[in-house]
Amino acid sequence: MKKIVGILFVMLVTTSSSNASALTMDMAISILKENNLEIKIAKLDQSIAKKDENFANGNHYGKIEFLQDIAYSDDAGNVFGFKLTAREASLGDLGMVDNDVLQAQGALQQADPQNNENEKSNLGNTEPDSLNYPDARAFFQSKIRYEVPFFTGYKLTNYVNIMKSMTKMKTLDKHKVINEKVYQLRKSFYDMALLKNSTKNLKNILNNIHKLENMTKSMIDVGYAKKVDLLEVRAKKGNVERLLMDMKLNQKLLYHFISFLLNKKVTNIVSPKTSMPMPRINSKEILEKNVDIKRALVGLKIRKHMLGVNQAANYPMVGAFAEFATADDTFLGDAGDHAAYSLGMRLSWNLYNGGIDKASIEKAKIELIKTKTQVQLARKGIGLKIAKIRTEIKSSNEKVIFLEKELALANEIYNNYEGRYREKLSSMSDVIIKQSQQIEKILELQMVKNTRNERIFALEKLANGDL
Image 1: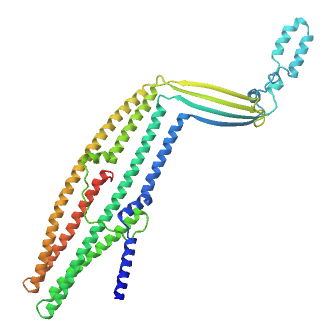
Image 2: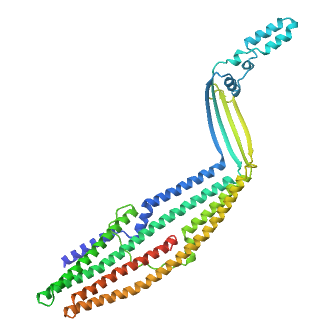
Image 3: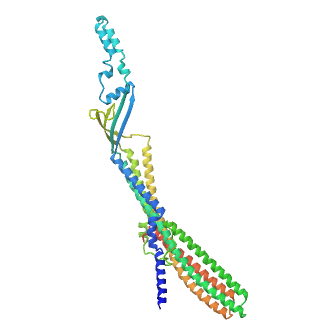
């Protein structure tokens, strides 16, 4: 009694640990949304679009720049300009107190009054050395400038709205990628369930073949069967074993694909039922949830804002600036005394450019009409897809019902022919033929169920997976 309890305990622990390590579909979907590389890329694209939106919105607030100029020159114009900018210019910088000029003025006072006019004329042509040949001077100018647009013909507003719409578009793209990956993952789980179910049925058939093989050997020993019957059984046995090997390899491929989707190694999953329930959702609700239609509507908004950007050419552009600066021959030397400010505004208005702006606006209007037509086409096209998928699901449902009945009949016929073979009322070839029909129905039923599940998944995709 203790031994039996111990065995049951070990079996229970083994089963519990096996179930704990197996991955359920809900767990897999949660891991998928966090680990899948394509979903991560889509999320990064969404973040990039959000930064572009912030960039466009920042243009409303203008910009503040700090400029630092450093120069050293003995060019006459530069030196005089440096001093003037630093508020340190003097009459001497103009050459009016230059030695050569003073000497000429003294000579003029001592000259004969009759030649006074000629001397004055010569004095005007005197070249002051301090103006033409100044000493080299350093120049440091520190400047803060703020520029802000007041009115841009609503161009900036439309650009911001375009960037917001692009963020919405990338968000929808992210949802579309998630929807696609969840679709692939769920389909893989249901494909695995169908493979395991078909494998189970084929293993039952293989067990029957083993029994048939042993029975044929016994019948050969007593002279009731021929060796060719045994060869037929073994040939069919090899065929079933090959099918089982193919299904085993397909299961491995599915595990590899699930591991790729989850970006982690997966070796065991909890398979769902082989048939998906039909979602209860009408076509109108699917159209409201469809990502492609939502993307088309966002694209329509973008086109409207693009038209606004083009229409901004009809308005004047108004901007303002404020500037504060200080300059000296040293960095920030006497900054308070040498400070200066400037305030200003600018209006620019493109009155005529050969009709280019008008043509751009007309083109934007045509593109807007085209986008509206594309939205209508998207609605019609997806509505047609919904009707087609529903028809295909209904057809698959009917086929499943008939094939399940045909498989039950094939099983009964095979059992009947196996009994008839024991009684020498039918040949081994007849038994093998009936068994082939049995296998054919199993595989055909698997394919129809797989097609039905795929069509239901396709319907879920159209509704953005929200059923």
